Length: 561
Image 1: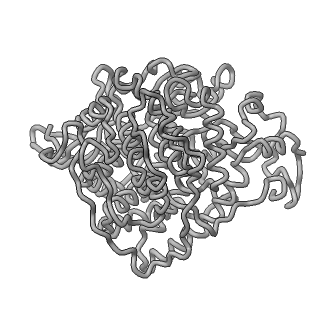
Image 2: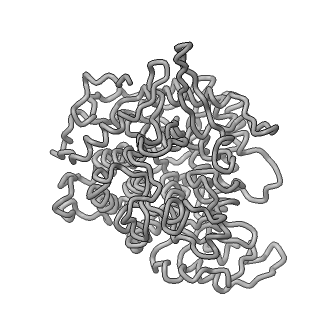
Image 3: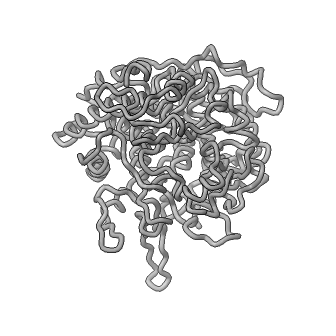
């Protein structure tokens, strides 16, 4: 397999790059509608670098201005592209030995199409049946893409964006039903024909997936990655290509279309996102709503101001206001909201109803009363008619922080929750994909007796190292990098020694997952992104968007219902 050009790369995988020159903002774009002020990074809450453990590989001192430099990250483009100039940071930081191993394994995972790198394989574990782990997944590639962008290697990301948007135009059928034109593939693979000496791309839009569910999140991740590429490189030409603009239009059309919805959230089937098996996330899962919100905000920065683009922008702004209100009002849970639900009256029939979803107080799970800290809070897993899923989902809450779906106060409470419930949510290996696990009769009903999603395994309370990069980004955005450093220290005790598994099992994440693939690429890339982002917080701008001042926080639930 050919390798990326390496004549300017160091032994640990880092490439010498220079800073890109400043580029102008989008001309004529009305930025008054978009966030304009620095959000609070709560620098005061940041502990000293000297408070770290003696085993920490991180620099002993990073001035506050470095974290403040990550504040202005809401525009589509960066005035510069920061990157590594050597394996040593300006602060004298020497990379951990695991860092070089991660880069080596990430480069081994590269997939080539007609001589060009187009993505990274899901896992390099050859000990088990490949299933679809030999494919390039849209969601899985995101941390790999960010790692390459942070290292100044942009070509692979550009190739991936262009190849996947061309796959979008394929006819998509399951049995005799044709799927929406805007659906993006969950994954693709390169098919080699030795007889004809040719290569073709084969895409999976859900027709081969477990449960035959279309990947709702793929289109959102694609838009988010396009914005990250544009932000990192300062190059708007890729986003302005007709095929990229059309691709965004198709994605937006399919998720902004009118129907029987009474809520601004997206109604989804089980298994439509990272949790791709039956796990009771049907309805309005937090992961999809947070990604939807973030993709809409990214699209606002990427759409051209032609007639069609302006029409989409108007629809996006309306949806964002409705979505932010809905999520902050009805999905948010803290001690005050929990007490309100505990005291709900039911069977209210009028527009003045307080219990708008007719939630039965007796449906509150026993664990939630001890789990909820005094000062913490989070976005719960799902809200629908007479239903609240009170489980904690890591990805959705981290994306809520990064997209500013969470207000600054809510973001602080989410981080407070993680610190207060470190034993439950992090344990011995970051990071619980959801908490708590479902078991017993509930497990049989919700999962259909899924042998892969037994309690504290896989998506049912398993620990996923990949989630580290999302936690790190959220920590930097809220001004609490010490939380990320603590999680990285845990990762570095064993992830590489365990051959980079996909996930860990057990309440504390102590055991390598019973069906976990080794050399899982997004476990590798998630670690790299976390390290590089923590060492240079300006990278945060690729994946975070500042708060929109016009989306004002709603009042307390008890008075806003």
